[in-house]
Image 1 (cartoon, rainbow, N blue to C red):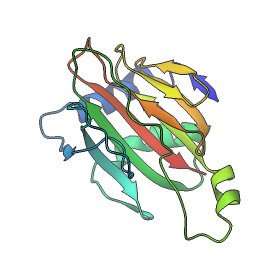
Image 2 (image 1 turned 90 degrees about the vertical axis):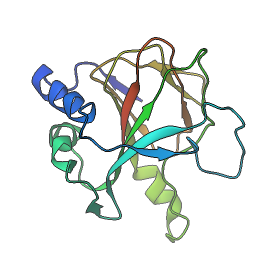
Image 3 (image 1 turned 45 degrees about the vertical axis):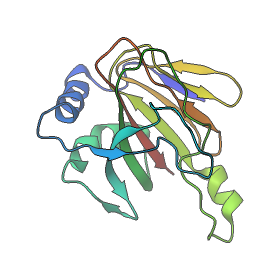
Image 4 (image 1 turned 135 degrees about the vertical axis):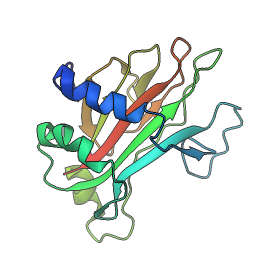
Length: 173
């Protein structure tokens, strides 16, 4: 696992942050944070998302704002890029543990999963975090990125001390 603070220049970071917090930026409601067969009964198990890229294509005209992040990640093949926005809660709650991407139809699934990386870019500082299956927690710090093997299970959390918590998830080779 690699944690890098001040990942982008201040100007690059503010460009991404200001775009995602602009009134014209479109967010989409997701009634669950993690999609799988478990049922999370928390009233806070929802988020807003914006998919920039998936299925080998940009899915948003905002995709170009990710170029400084993708360049610094040295991303050869992007699989998916998605922003998540959570609203504040009275107490911090963690989502279910998960991996972002699975490829059940690929013959050599394990080799693919072993090679794929996930990166989480934090747009704002708050008391939320990402927790990993080994118990390690990465705090939400503005302009921080954490890079880890895609098969490492992780969970995001809500937060209590900011209007929003925004991260961008990248799955790539």
